[in-house]
Amino acid sequence: VGGGGERSGGTSSSSTGSLKDLRVTMVCEEDVLPYERPALTKAFLNERAPARLPGFHTSVGGGGERQTEEWYREKGVETKVSTKVAKCDFAKKRVETVTGEIIEYDSLVIATGVSAHKASFIEGHDGKMCKVLRSHEDALEVVKAMDAKPKNPVVVGGGYIGLEVAAGMCARGLKPTVVLMESNVMSRLFTKEIAAHYEQLYESKGATFIKNASVKKINDGKSVILNDGRELNADLVILGVGSDVQPNVEPFGDELEKAKDGGIKVNGKFETSQKDVYAIGDVCSFPVRLTGPNDAETHARMEHVKHARASAAHCARTVIGEKDVPNYKYEPFFYSRVFEQPDSDRPVSWQFYGFGGHAAMETGKVSVIGPIGDFKPQLVSFWIETATKKCIGCFLESGGSIETQIAKDCAEKNPLVDVDALSKSSTVAEAMNVLAEALKN
Image (tube, rainbow, N blue to C red; front, side, top):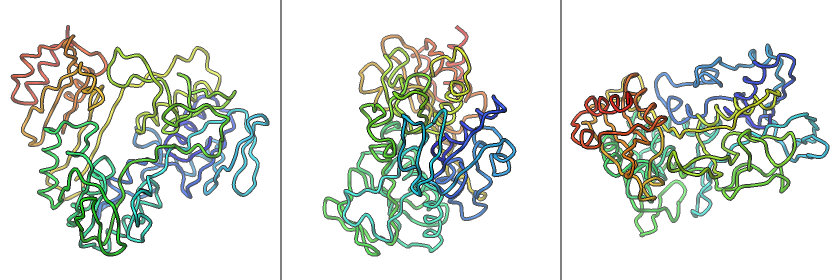
């Protein structure tokens, strides 16, 4: 198993749990064992009671065992941390590390993920005050920078990384300025109406948003200059502008077929174009529906922890020789949890199940009902297929267990909805009752 994220740990867990005499070797570039990467932009940034390893090793986030060094040793998994693969010889079935070590394999699982975007298009992106956040080492650097109490922190990007880091700053009493190219935060998923609630909450906690803007230059230790000429004082810059366009495929050359998005192309069992070679998680491009339950499948990458875990477990079934393994089916899911530090007066926890966001809206076949609720603390929105009146996606803030299950069931079962009744709902409870009735039919 090449790579050291949730995908590698998940594959090791699934493999060793299914075939006791299987010999697994896991090669990790990072200097720590696989861990739950989402924690790095959440509780890891807390000033009080921060999350630290070994507390969030794979697979505690998914309800599994904590896979510590002792766990791997007990399972007979050989782990090689601080080890990077340089190249692969598929004909001879072996990989070579940067130090020249040769590791032979019967089956190879590529789980190398993606890299944090270095924002090389911005002049001065490599200055000392500029930080990215993808790895455990990155997160330690960001925490160290926050501990220094910067007076003018700037966050570049209004997506997952940008918002979660900004929340961590606000919780520490810092006042971040968030620069985003779009007209609202989380623009790929949130409608402007949903985004407005979160923007107002962040602003109440000290954040400032500069929208429809981009960074042209960073003067290290001094300022950030925007494309329109505005200059912002800055003593810390977090580059939260997403992942590289190309995933981490360099060690494998051109011998593996790639999809249009640069990911390693796999089938529904995560088999690549090379025999006995598999790819999972962020690095693979797999058959998936993107905008609706009735869409034709297309190859695409999904950078999400749910897919990381699920693809690892599914791939392991093929690797160990299980018969009649079905093709992988993935239902889109997104979530975020911030402001959950011990003294928080307003924790945020939203989930999105199913198909939605601008990708679905741009088809012209989907409309949104909501947001419904007062954001104190709950909020809900529904993505409805215009022609069929079926619910294909649900966004839910601060849902309880029953409401969360309804949202999940709607995304999976796509019930026919009473659109008029749903539109007239004034509370989350009323709206969820409409969906609960729809699910009975």
